[in-house]
Image (cartoon, rainbow, N blue to C red; front, top):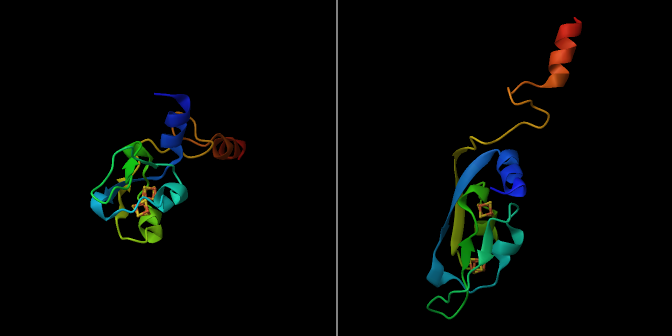
Length: 109
Ligand code: SF4
Ligand code: SF4
């Protein structure tokens, strides 16, 4: 796994799932443009209307925020949360899951 992808998995607090109703899509690309985690891209395939619907780049990138569904003018996509991300790491945490700043303050007391 690339470093960038591994980092991305660690900063995302929740995992989500996105559902796409392919044949409702008109390929406007709003969902791709506004997805905050860049989980989507337009597919090279055509739907029944002759448009390129979105596809999920990597399921681990979806946080389930639901923004894609809010922006879609055709109700062709929606996302939902499935739970906490097991790979999430708090900023500044060590590999043991402790915060060095908190630890040093505690030992000074
Ligand atoms: S916003 Fe909706 S209609 Fe536009 S590309 Fe995404 S799924 Fe298709
Ligand atoms: S639910 Fe959020 S993170 Fe997932 S694809 Fe939609 S906009 Fe992107």
